[in-house]
Structure formats: C-alpha cells, structure tokens
Image 1 (cartoon, rainbow, N blue to C red):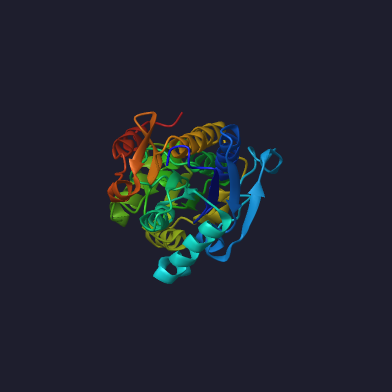
Image 2: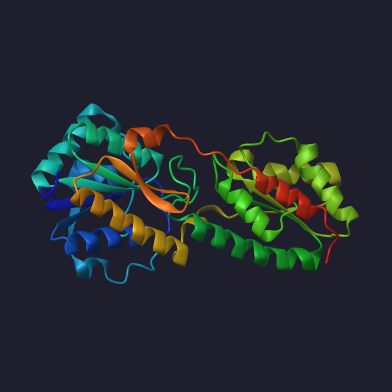
Length: 328
C-alpha cells in the first residue's frame, strides 16, 4: 500500500458523537498535507453503497472543529450487512477511485469495516461513541462531552431538588454499558447509580442508599439510572410506593449526544484522525486507532472486535465511601 494511497474516503456511522467533525477535519487536513485527495462519504455505509459523496478540501472543513454532530451525516445500513450490499460498496470505491477508507464510529462501524477490508479495501477505524464501550480502546471520542452535558443538566436539576426537598431520578444513555452513568453519578454526588453490569436489587441499590442519606441529614436524593438498567419512570414509581416520597423523573435522552465537543474530545479526535491517515500513508491498514495506557496504538480490526472492556468497579467503592459521609 506504500505510496499507492492517492485518494481516501472518510465516513461517520452509527450514533453521532461530539468530536466526529473534529476527526473528519483531522483526516482531511492530514490527507491534504500528504498530497492525498479526500472524499467525504455521507450517511455512513449506506452512502458508500449509494455513491452519496462530496469532495472535501480545506475550505469544507473550516470552522467545524467546535461543531457537534457530524457534517457527513450518519445512518445505519441493513443493506450493507448483506453480501450484495457490500459488493455495491466495493463497486463505489472503484468508481470513485478510493484507495482506502477511514471509518469513524463504534463496534457496528468496525464490523462493517472488517467485511469491507476482506473484499480488498483497506480501512482504518476511529472509535467514536458517547458510551465509551469499545473494547479495544480505553477512550472513545464523545464520551467526555456527553458526561459534561449530563453533569451540567443534573447540577441544574439539583438546585430545584434542594429547594423543594425532593428525590430526582435521572436516566442517562447506556443501553449495554454503565460507563457514562457511573462517571456522571460520581461527578454529581449521586445517592445511587444503577448500571446494566450490576443486576438491580431495589432494596440494596435504591432503598438502602436513600435511607442512609436521610439518616445522615439529607432531604434530597439523586438517583442516576443507565437506560439499560431499567426505566427511570418505573424506578420512580417504585420509590414512591416503597418510601412514600414523590420523585421527579428526568430522561436526558439525545441531548447527551449534542453540543460543542470538549477540549479533550477535540484533542483526541485530532490525534486519532492524524494517526489514521498516517497509518494508510505508511502502508498500514485494516486496523483501529485505539488508546491504551495513554498512548495511541493500532490494533487489527478482527482482534479489536474480540476485545472486551470491563467497567472499573472501583468507582463503585468510591461512590459508596462518599455516600457514607455526613452532609456538609
């Protein structure tokens, strides 16, 4: 592949995450600095099948570093999961003269990248998801921004909860992983945090922490629920039935995906975008750019997809220790 990469495609796929635009910008500018052309594939793998593209130059990515979402749009493609769909994608690569692809997204994106690479198109993946649940990488683009967005919202909720001495149940994203919920819960001093990795015991995980907080003098309680751990509305109803208090339920939803990316997400996106293009330019491909112990590394896609990430349960110990304190 060395010296053969003249034109690369870049796409974003799956759920959007703050910092995707910064990664696209880094890919485009790095490619241009190496004398490569860059083609933006709109709407992910679906766009590659349907030849939905735009030529990207320096002017196209100007001022997008601070913008949330993705300028290339994103979508999920059932057609790409079929052999016929992937053949169409390869045909588009040939038609557009694409020598390689940079794919920005999560596990679903990387599964598509693996299939495309098996058909002879070199692909490098960049992990971007607010859930931070990509097994091969310690960190994913978008996580820090989503955490800060959730913390800001919960801080505002806490103001009114304290004023009215109420219980608040807040649902954050995390269908299969509790990284976001636990990180946010620690950051806001939650009374309890419910995550998919721990099977819910209502008495132990909700009732007991609220009772402990009340005995310690608290008159307001904050319960953070990952969406995969249970419905916030049902948790709130159980609290009312069991303890006789009247919770207010807030579902943050897609607000967590939006907003201008934080400095951490921008910086990580820039580094990963640069690393992806550099790998292709130097004859390496079919890998994912990952963070491991603070460093960027390239891991083969097939190996990356087999890796698992386990929640750092020591954060639970910290949460429980801080819950035991007397109120300030």
